[in-house]
Image (cartoon, rainbow, N blue to C red):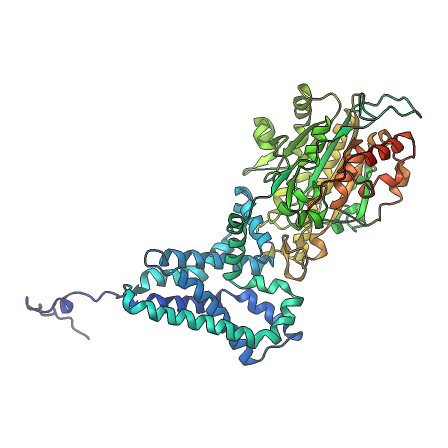
Length: 601
């Protein structure tokens, strides 16, 4: 057996190192070499989405070994230049850490949701409210960030010791390495132009997969570019807005063909959220996700394209008189549909159950649904700071009374902005009675669910929207003794549900799949169609025509008989089905005598 013997005590004059345990000593390294190591980490560990995409496209353009090497060198050099910009003594650790955390989080969403970090996605992210943001924070995201950012950050703070900067000796060395990085980027760009140019032209999304540079460039474009860009001049388009002959005291003379005294209009506009047309039962989807709307005999246009692929892009565009092309290239800011309706003499109000109206309701009455609802209604329809859209139905009576009490007796337009089918927490978008399809995905991480579970939970949210629209129609029917009523539902954009590895929405429009752009447009005619002499049977015969958000402004103007030089009858989808009469002739005569619509240049 072994025997244990006490060790002899060290003499008092023994060296301290021999008497005390050894402690870990951080490895000394200069900031320029640490930046290079982190740049390599970005290229090899934080650009998985880029390398995966490049691998998928190898059938179109296979890169040789040396071309792949040059690609890696160019990515590393570009990241190195950015990290060196952050290498100031009191900034570098914090700046590098934030870069790594951002890159790791962005990579997670690229890999699991198929997003790309262009300017539109950055704007969409900055506009996301707290509730929507928390829905995206999952254990998977935290684990991914901990692995791909936490490890290098731990080394950065505990594993190495950055050498003090000696400007006389370090400045020229750092300048030399940065110059070399620029030379590699330039040389590599020239060598890779021939094989890479076709890929970039045909697949523009790959440039937004370069991590972290795509996020940095897009964020800079969104936040810094406006500082150096002159703010667009605001122009009014409502100065000549007027109510037509169907109103008492309207702009035009009464119709000679009939002297009917119409009731004031009450139109509800529902801005749908994240509804894709190919999952709409009314459009022939095998699952009947819209039984309630079908039972109420709505008019459904089947071939409608959105203005954008996210709320921030689509909502201001659909309420504009300009149309998508002119809106995106405009040189002035203009009033929108709601401003014109209000200026004409109608009550206009916006009720929101999402992250705001994106500026559309700034000049009219507006409210957030959960801020004006009773505690009982909040308890019934809200959970974890999110509310089902049916909360807004309960508020309609009070809201209508509020806006008409001190407003115009001529008529009212109520706008309801849905939460709809906004992801990724689709399971929170439907009440128990609407959960027709089981099993459904019950997690925020949609890529963790099977395809069938994801489709089930999304379709359940569509059933909930169907119920919400139907309940709103039923409420309008209770108002028909006092108003001529009608309803329009139009979604802002669609959604990807895992097709080709894509989830959610917000891809650049030119590369976005049809699932993110093909949206449903529904009208419940009520009595408003008859009020403006529209033949309903004619409208129902033309529901396959190609339409877009461009038609929305002008269709609403025509339906409400509001006159303005901004109105374009050729974009009014109801115009071709109006009965020719004295009123229409008067409209044409008045329009010809008015000033032309505002120029966009």
